[in-house]
Image 1 (cartoon, rainbow, N blue to C red):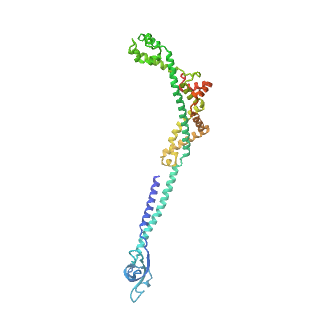
Image 2: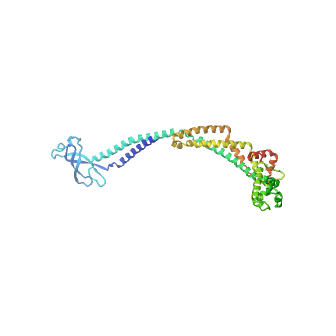
Image 3: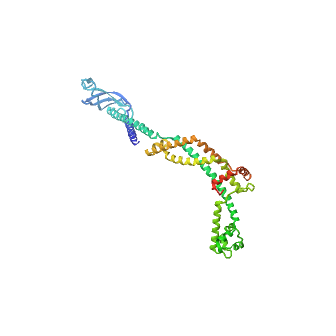
Length: 399
């Protein structure tokens, strides 16, 4: 929360200032205590003193601030009535370039002031930092309390399994359509080869005569399509409009046949295209209605789960939930509630196991036997199932 961030920032600034003050405070040098002879002293403690340097053993004089509160017996003239001198004690620096110089207590006061201010800043900064950290995290935990990563993970696994079985079933169905197309087209061509070209001459009227077609070696509708308009124009007495009309009519006949011609497999005359179709069909026949039902349920469930998972995305983790806005969190929690209902229903129905089993059944390898022998044998034992399944895939009347 922004408010707690500012509190935390202020606390950290105070602690940083305390550290700077403490680091820059004058350090206490090594000192040695000595006796001072007070040559002159004022009431506020300002005095002139003489002392013997303990390091080079020479006498030195200088200003000093004596202890104004010391006993009067140590002050002039009580201390030494004859000379009018007083006595005090002090310190000299014992190391460095200032060795032998008097050390002023005023410097200690400055250092003490800095350290005291440093302690004050810490005293205020630490509570503010604690409030910012604890308050911010409590607020973050409150915002992230709706995170349900485990439920999201379960829903994603189920959605993947549901989408997979739908894809596996669609792939198997597409394999059947792909294998069926050339077989069906071959049956259409066979029917077109049985239709005499005279049907076109009757429809076209006097513009196209059967004798002319027969002279050119064109006897069936299939041969008309093979010749095309350009081939018909080469025949004597056939004009371009008539040739184009005849080919267009032949194509309409072929299109009509494609809607009604059935694909029938002859077990006595197995050939590669029919075998490929039976091999593709056998996968779905072996998988049976349970696989189809699982694929349909998976398709519906994957769509619903995908929509809910998109809305529930912030609930996938505590960090995501904390970063989401209030409206997003509200929608995410509602989506999670729906996801749980779907998960419970799927668990009760055993959907995950159904999807997994259906995917395994739909991914069985093709027939490895010579010329798909086992597929032909299986087809011979239950042809109705094969034809019924083919009708469901390509449409009734075209199987």
